[in-house]
Length: 272
Ligand SMILES: NC(=O)C1=CN([C@@H]2O[C@H](COP(=O)(O)OP(=O)(O)OC[C@H]3O[C@@H](n4cnc5c(N)ncnc54)[C@H](OP(=O)(O)O)[C@@H]3O)[C@@H](O)[C@H]2O)C=CC1
Ligand SMILES: O=C(O)[C@@H]1CCC=N1
Image (cartoon, rainbow, N blue to C red):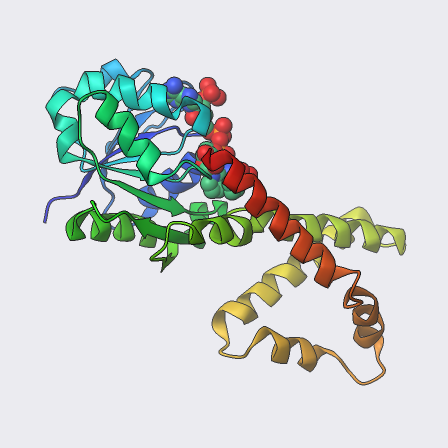
């Protein structure tokens, strides 16, 4: 089968993560990247600055929307103008937090085109092939389009398919934003280590190494997180003392719940 043709609209933080993962995969797609700044020296990639520069011989199978929601309608209208009937052969894969399938398909319809929409919520570890994405396909998407989007996301990590679009709110709050929570934990551990007199270099190495090792255990061992936690916790030892603080109802249990609720609320607002 020939490699699929993918138009990546927006190559900022997330778009670059996806692009990096695709280019490192064994069978990279043919890619046109629409971005005002991105440069990329790769035979599989053509970078264009404006939608009217899409090559005439390029008919995208999937148009990945990795732009900010505020510009989505404008970008879709410009692509529709340039692609014309070629747009009807494509599906959108939106990775934007918020923006429903219906609103994106409506934007294409406004330009006189019909284009099914799928939505995914990847995360930035995709750049290392270690991402995890939620994927939702609207009923208009064909099986082939859904499989293609699944394959694109699989090239950069794991994929969790959801059958209800509203489930993407929880996916966004948990795994889309999730790497930031872990990076914050790394920052805080590093600071706390320094406060205990460790050098900045040592505190950084210890904090990062701990998160990396714990992450690998979660990924590679079959055990529940709870069992892994308990295996570190000697009775009446140091971990028990620390966890007694973190697990107080008003500490991590409440903070995490509040954080996830806030992210879900914001994702809902962005959906419009
Ligand atoms: N960052 C993350 O971890 C995740 C982000 N997302 C979603 O991905 C989307 C992008 O986020 P993120 O990558 O962080 O944002 P960025 O701002 O880093 O990237 C957006 C990119 O799109 C470009 N762009 C904007 N307008 C146009 C246009 N009209 N034509 C061409 N290029 C344009 C921007 O260029 P310019 O700078 O010139 O505006 C920028 O390079 C968001 O909708 C977000 O919800 C989803 C999951 C995770
Ligand atoms: O912060 C955001 O809105 C995006 C969506 C998930 C991660 N970054």
